[in-house]
Image 1 (cartoon, rainbow, N blue to C red):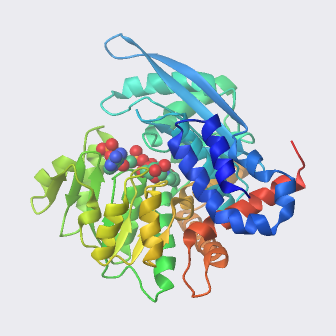
Image 2 (image 1 turned 60 degrees about the vertical axis):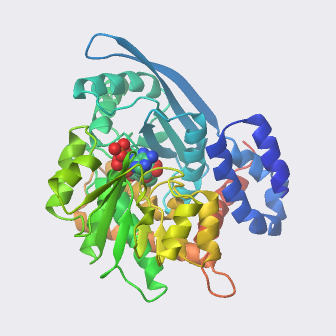
Image 3 (image 1 turned 90 degrees about the vertical axis):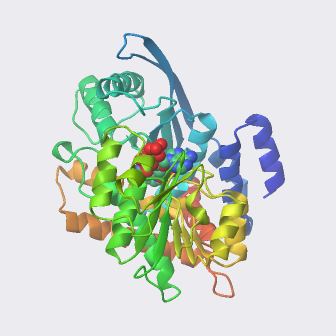
Length: 445
Ligand code: NDP
């Protein structure tokens, strides 16, 4: 593999798509060795076929706000690769959404979904619509207009979207309602659905729970557990709250959460009624981080800062991409962090990852750590296909099993001669091999 040539060609074709190029480079660097050892990949030109999405749908979304003004947003669906199953990946509603971000997320999704052991291809979609500060009625009108375009491209055996940043249970409800009306069918075309209309138990907390199950396996390789550990978490969305609950349940003390404007440090730990309070604030579409420090006076709000300056044993970045840079990594290492597990997608910059690997910290990438979300979506699809609903225990056990199996795959392909596990390499190689072999089996299409 001529990595630099591939990257140069890609940069020329897609100038300025920095997040996408960053994600492709990270994967290619990891798989270079195994790729070169298997010349049949090169003869089938697997890399060129893998790094470009199968197709991208771009559309405009017109909707009317509460004051009667017509608003226009952009909508996208990037269908990246369906060699091992229907396209599957979340929808993100956030003003920062652009094609580069969705291509990076869709590309990552291919390998993540492959790691889950379930038959799901990779996709991603979303819009630059900002749900923050919008009324329920505005969010409903936007979601309905968005689905008016998207429904033509998706289906239970074709492409099954889910939530992501800015898309939770409420948005999935509005999207599903419109899909059901247009397609005239009640099928599992979206995951993250409400429990009364085809959703799975545990799905809302699955990504955070799965992240902690994965980190638990990482810690076990060093004879460590969550018990008595201090945990720093960023964000406080779908992923962060599940991780906060599970880490606390396992005996850890979660001392931070964050938002775009800063972070909260609560030395007493964020658990119980504090989590309920945060969830109430979230449901009201308000900023949550600052009000928390008024409600619980022992907590401090650090304006414009990130939680990585706090002393902790375990760090779980659960907010957004590139939210943990080199300086943050060095801070964490200096303060004695032993494990960094990415709940978000690509939260650490390449320079930060380099530091973690160099210092032999337990470090694992989002595509392995947060795969519990899409895995439980896969379990939701299975329940929908069978027209059944599994009890909590069964879903949770399957999730736990899947996270352990992803961990084993990372160890299998990532362990070096000294016994250090490079989870980045392990996850990328394991995810790649399954998809690449499926592509080889199915010919050039
Ligand atoms: P949410 O929208 O529910 O939460 C995101 C959280 O991060 C919010 O608390 C938000 O604060 C905060 N945030 C946003 N931008 C920043 C920033 N620049 N600095 C600090 N905090 C910030 O999203 P999810 O929890 O669903 O997703 C979080 C990450 O996890 C994303 O990378 C997503 O792709 C990934 N992921 C999510 C899965 C899922 O099942 N939901 C599955 C797999 C991965 P505020 O609300 O105040 O803006």
